Image (cartoon, rainbow, N blue to C red; front, side, top):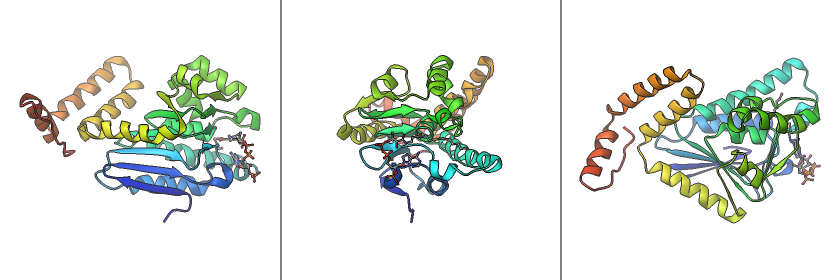
Length: 257
Ligand code: CO8
């Protein structure tokens, strides 16, 4: 069904593996299109999406430089927008998305990881925004999300120098939440996904929405926004089930309603 993706569904957990081995999983227009399609086609009942790259060397080695090399201004704008739109789709998906970064996450690779909610990586992962060395800037929203994730000073250093950083440095600056040995990365991603998917899906979705949207709002508006969604939780069956289970010392089976 897809030329560049492998999709695996394990109960409520979907795994999307980007697979373009000849270019270390670099993102061309076709792959970006397939990622958008795959996200739209996630089965109902999916509670967590994991995104990773095929092989042990690279997560995503950036946008495809051979495709970008001959673009003019209008085409460059369109290519950037195409990636940015797909990544925004990931960011605003109502379920959490975990990036399991299994190697190079450069340029567009670092940017797709940053569009995910949680990043974990293998000890051989390398992160970087090397675009200025190619005569461009991060164009899949990297200037926006890197500064929000690691602060302006560190984002500017990484983007202006174009230098790669190793997994331990990515952990130190808060770009990833944890580092694993390569063979332990996917089991750890699945374990994290399972822990999330045992919780009330609507509540998890509201929490994601509050954190994402609230981040850009003035504090008082963000608090009012949270207050509205907190109230809405009490209109769900899962809130009744979750609290009843607690009071009867049982465990709720959440239905996502
Ligand atoms: N695009 C196209 N092909 C690539 C890319 C890429 N990003 N990365 C690797 N490849 C290809 C190589 O050309 C090579 O192909 P071939 O075998 O035909 O020569 C193959 O993958 C294997 O790569 P290497 O031989 O280079 O492998 P190494 O182990 O020596 O090096 C690296 C691995 C360090 C990852 C190296 O390949 C590299 O530096 N790649 C480019 C990394 C990069 O600069 N990425 C950023 C690209 S720019 C970007 O992502 C911008 C995003 C915003 C776009 C906005 C649009 C307007």
